[in-house]
Image (cartoon, rainbow, N blue to C red; front, side, top):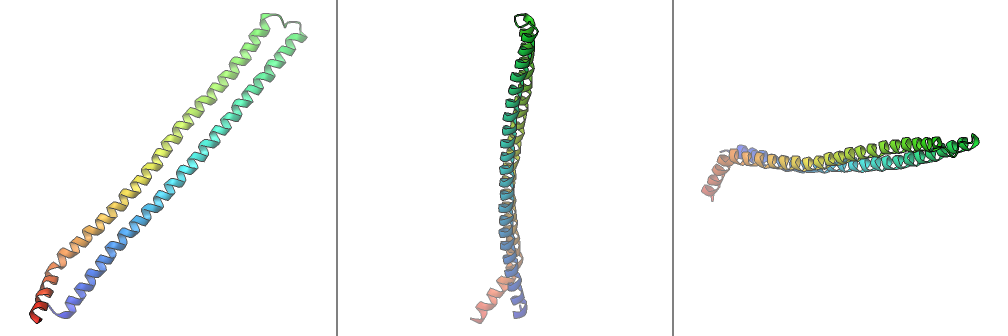
Length: 169
């Protein structure tokens, strides 16, 4: 083989090696970025969960304050009408309490649903991070496969070059 062809083969092989290694490094960097994004999504998800819990706590407090006001107004109205000793007042107070506890239960159920959604979102983010690692491994494997293919294609050329060098020695 002439020296120019041999030189071009060596340069081409070197470029393939460089490309394979650079591709694997870029894939790893992309995986790290994807993992960072998924981590940020988890942090946002946690902030939203905290916000939901804070809002539900405030709503619960509001429900119980409203219940106290309504019970006080019902008691005051019954006393003003002279009906504070009757069963009507107790029934009215029970109705106010029942509605308040029903509203409170609705908030608790919504919080439970929200917690489930946040848990699922965190699971998705974790899987995105795992996927980023797998994609980086795939890119690295593809780089090694490309390098192996290049070695196989160039083996005859390098073999002939070696034989030529040994003949000159």
